[in-house]
Length: 304
Image (cartoon, helix red, strand yellow):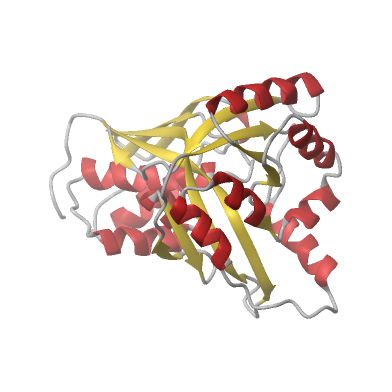
């Protein structure tokens, strides 16, 4: 056994993400897709609290927790199991998740919980894993999990798990419209494959103009460069999202796109005042269930 289990609970705060560019390549033989995935962490957070226990168990509170599994299929539970297995200990921990990131909304809420659980357990158990070891476990858990640990802004290659940090020169303001129900990420990728069948899908590359806009902090330039190759697939599966995108644009958003695999839609706005105006208009439009306002970039998983 490595380290000594603390008796005091450990709480980790971990952010949501938006994909300001999601370039998707053709399906690989293993079923995954090569990506050029430009992640930006945003200031909506889940918290994961790890407490010593006689066995592994998961509890949750907050938005839409009835939609998340509270058994060992939860990514947070899998994170605890993988870390414990690497250090030859039992994953005896109570993980309590306080949800504020939309569930199944394309904002990496489940991935955030996994990264949060991993850091919380590493701290609780004093396993003292290196950053690279934690990132290895994150990559084993899922494509978005490494970024949830790191935060800020990064380019994800491979399945999205191979990260290169990116400079951000200012604060970007966002409004997120939460739809009714979720969208299955595998289903959205499947629809992407169907829609692109028989076409020459280009190799995914990060757009230089988008990276330059991030580095300069220029919201108008970033708005002109936002792109999500999964958006047509998400709109095909959920046509009603088109009305949400149109409502936010009509209300003055600089740009609108589906966040990741959806169905949450993201609206880049010029400042905090515009964010409140666009949020109010989206709610009034009746095209979404709730709206959230947040800034970016945000820090990654951190013990609080």
